[in-house]
Amino acid sequence: MDWRLIIVLAPLIVAASWALYNVGAIALRQAQQFIGKNS
Image (cartoon, rainbow, N blue to C red; front, top):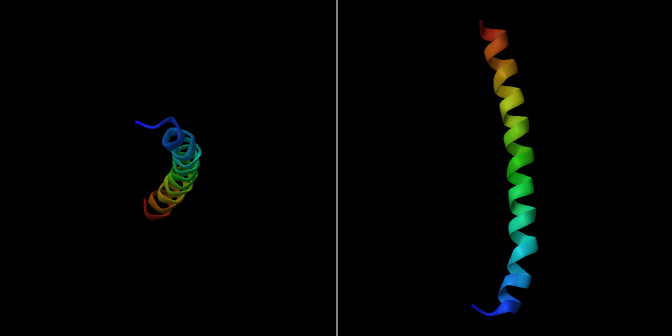
């Protein structure tokens, strides 16, 4: 694999994983609030 490809993809992978982590945390919080309201 070309090292330039790694240099280009590494920040994109980090950004995507960070975004998924943040969205997942918010989704979990909302799901817990939703479950809490129903029970």
